[in-house]
Length: 569
Image (cartoon, rainbow, N blue to C red; front, side):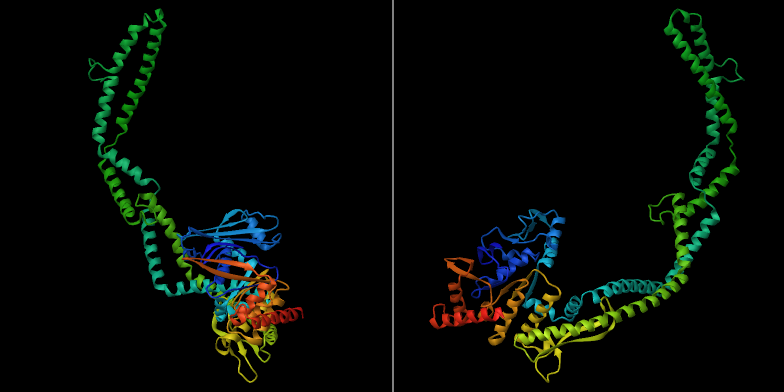
């Protein structure tokens, strides 16, 4: 992993061992930045305050070796990423303005992908994680993970039934608490439908009646205009001397008829006049028929206006009520159709309530039965889990401690069943089991949490474990046992530990130290892989605060030798 311009680290390369890697250094040297860098690579929150003063951006790049066929590589490939000689390359950039970018296998990816990759690649455990594990919900989740399929399979069925039960219960509450409102709504809909049905409106009727009203209201003017136009085209029988268009057209045709054979062009014009004559005759006939058919009937006009008033009343009340803009009779008919469907639904509420009550009763039985299965599976897993953690505590210098689970029924069913789960600790014989948040000291709590994680390592393994000072509050023989247990865990997984304890650091396969130098006003930190000689010097500093003390070096060499012997057991 390469870190640039992050916090106090200007530019550093962190080479992690396949087994047990320990990271040490003085307070303020930048050990936390190593943990933060891993967090950024795994989709952690980007804080612009992390960017080194004077730098435009911080960059963290990581190389995950032997990634071929891993779940992380498969997820990355789905996003278009490619492996580099079997390794997965991940980078994260954080600008001083707060912008953040991520790349996996040469492809820009969303932060959510980094987070999902992190779930497959590494388990991070620090003092903050300890606090989270003190929460009952986290402890229930931990137990469920340990139990595996015996809890996971019925939990899927339970949650499906539980979600449906909540939906049915909410629907029933809505139907039963709004009975009066729904009855009033049904009465209004029924009145409106009766009013529309009594009028018996037809689609397009309002438009037809408007046209008829316009025609009847101007019948005299329309008749006069038609008669005058007819007379102008076809002549007036009562006045044989009047000149009309038909007579003039006939005269024009006769004038050309005798000479048309002398010029084809003139003949064509004569033919066109003939066509006009036929068209003129048709129009004149239609005008005569129109005038004869026009009926200036005051009674019919009154009936039309009365019908239009009825339809206008419906339009004012119901047009636009179906969801569209206020319009004509078409929207009244649309409202009536929608209202009829809604009324059917409201009238069927009693049947719906009955069906929902029956389904609710069945779901309650199903949820109760599945919750019982979950409780039984959790109790069985809790017994095994507690025995495994207790055995780990024996190796962590707590031979008389006993861990158990308190599984009690909650007040009501929840998304994960009806169990309240809490980890209990009896630190010594005769002590009553108490919640670990109340019954454990700081050092005991760290060892309990480490024991829990070691047990998880066997039940829910991941390739890499990162422990960030989970040995806080531990010292002496207990610290040696913590180191021994981490070394054993490193036989099957990569383990990275940030620690201040030389007893833990002595068990590591590779020892990295974060060193800080001050040059004027600029602080630079580097990460160095220690040789055997340098490692003795660092352990001496951690033991006595004196790097060059002969007594300190002798103690450090003795500690290293003891750790190697213990780790080989």
